[in-house]
Image (cartoon, rainbow, N blue to C red):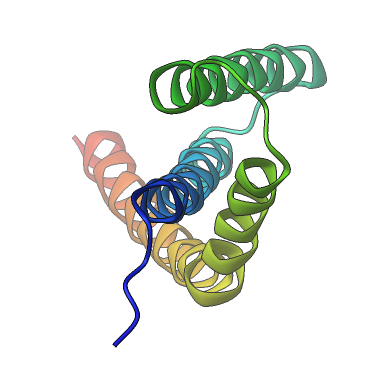
Length: 125
């Protein structure tokens, strides 16, 4: 049986870390999107949120590169992040956003009905 050299193993682990980072960053953006559905915002606030997200994204990638690869940018790391973003979106992201949308709409309807009942009770008094 052939053994894999230590440097190849390290690169495989780094690729895996990059994939996980990409998925985590996409999950973070979905959290932002869910918050936007709950409380709609204007274009200025959305733009500020996006700038903050991309700053966090850049810092996270920098930390990964600095800690794991002495700061060297390697194509397979960038590719790993892209794979993580893509896999998360394809396997979880679309499903998560669909069902969170259903849940948010349902909660808003229930809240609206509850508020109408409270308003009716307050008016009757």
